[in-house]
Image 1 (spheres, rainbow, N blue to C red):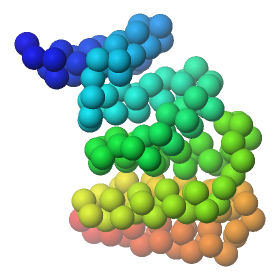
Image 2 (cartoon, helix red, strand yellow):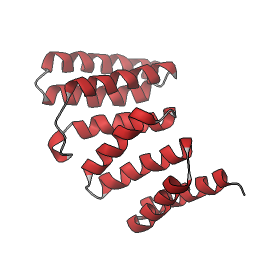
Image 3 (tube, rainbow, N blue to C red):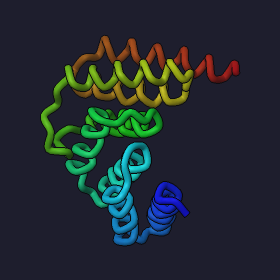
Image 4 (cartoon, one colour):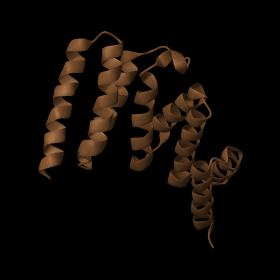
Length: 162
């Protein structure tokens, strides 16, 4: 078995333990992949570690993981997870110990929308727009939040037609 296959199995073991509630085992397996892997498999394990940090209540660590992935990862699947989750974390920035930087949020949002439209993932686009609308509403940008909600309605109609 080559290293990539071994790391994919190790990552899967981490996820299975996540769903079984064995959080110490999750961390062990995912850190093993991060330490030994590179590229997409490493980034995937990091994204999964972000989910673990959220589960453990360490939102600041999850925020830092996702921010790093957004800046460095080239894997679209990993970027999907990181972009959606970082915007969700931004829904309550005080819980992650980060100052809300609307310019940064807008940058992440635009990057995510570009990717979701390239791959024609309307459900992912919906999730991203929803989280962005919540951030906008929480910052008092109600007019822009309403625009996003109107876009959500269009997406729902498109999804329902298909």
